[in-house]
Image (tube, rainbow over all chains, first blue to last red; front, side, top):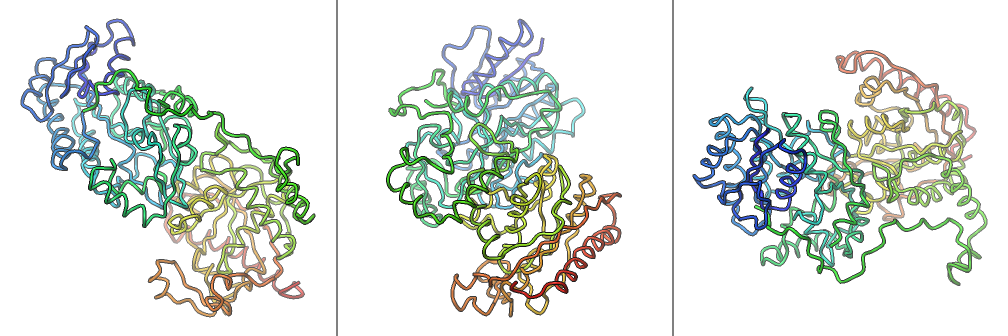
Length: 309
Length: 322
């Protein structure tokens, strides 16, 4: 029986993976959780502690639960907090997690990064593989902590023979439970886009991502992995699928508006995010699929049907 | 850390869910009763040449297998209806403006192939004409996938147009993936050096990059040399103002007899006659990571083939314009 500790278990993705692990096979996994917020109505089999990755108590959780695997989903993705908090949770938190894991003999860590770390640049090829540099900070400095978290984890992934560290870089996640940046953007009634640009986007269903994470646990994989769903479509085709209306605006106007709106707290993303509405950041997921045999179950149309709230 | 929401909220959008099935593509010849008076009038006044070309392009494209997903896009963003509209314009230029003549088009092999051509004329009409030739004249018809200059995708509308018509940024990864999918990929190793060459340099091939050769060897792809005769006189370059180019963030700023004198209109090419020569496909073997000196020899062979066809074409043609 594998003991799995999920950080950020009360989030949409955390709950999903936990439930998948419980139903995956009777007694195959023992699931523990830790989150800043409680998970009301969680299954009895799951033992969870309310703690923050930044607290001392967090190490106690690892000591007490003695996990074989830590699935690290706790990270701050929104911009409602001071950048220092994002850095402390995402970068320092991940570094400490790795140290604790070594100290307490944890065999495997799976870190949930994101496809965004590659950045949306005009010279991006379609289907970037894991060897591409993480260039997001070139145009989108506000998420530097995410890129740094990924680099810290990827750099350590081959360093410790007894600790397998896998870094998951899933494409845009959609689903009824998970709260993702792309969901927040596409579910607006009026979705701001850039005139003359219509990049291809890839999506993955939250259930498929949960299955991918379990595949990573089972196969004890190491290193960075792109996690890709089925197919890609242009942004302006995706928007009506979620019931929204695209509002194309010339870029110099859009940048100004978004900068101001973001400052005033009226828009959830900084101006740097605009590049993701201009250039594709599409990934080649074959490395993960070949290593683990993972295959996405949901087609694009099914993903949208399910994510349309 | 995430939310504690376990059941999805269902009140965000009051609108009925939009249809999930992608809308049917408009048939190229809509019937009058379903498209209204305006369309009927438009149809009445569409010159018969245009209508013939539209029908021909539609029929030829219908024979090309594409790997479109349920929303009508291929993995590199190609949209067949965008290809069709662009191809109608190209075909009209092909037939009635440049009056293109092709030689040896039956040499295009099946499956993956790398088309390598000379590049000139300030605007990439040579690429468009080769693309039109492979759709209109090749048996079976092919859509060639262009490897675009790195700055093109930064331009609004160009970005969208190039992607939808099947071109991609010319990175090695894109090229490798397209070849692996069995596509015909076109590259211009002269790049901007060729496109913006001066009139005095016409039909003299500029330096060829080596990237295409390494890709051809590593993917075991045949190279098909192509020579385009005519394009090098369509917009005679008198000078290339590098400092202005830098100022506008462009790769080149050409001065021609009409540009920038007549504004954007000055980019219209002269009605030269195009002759496109397709050479024999060449298979190169060896180590794709070989020293530059070894790769250079192979590149020189391709360059020689193209130069030979160019020289012959220029010598044999009765005039630049007919």
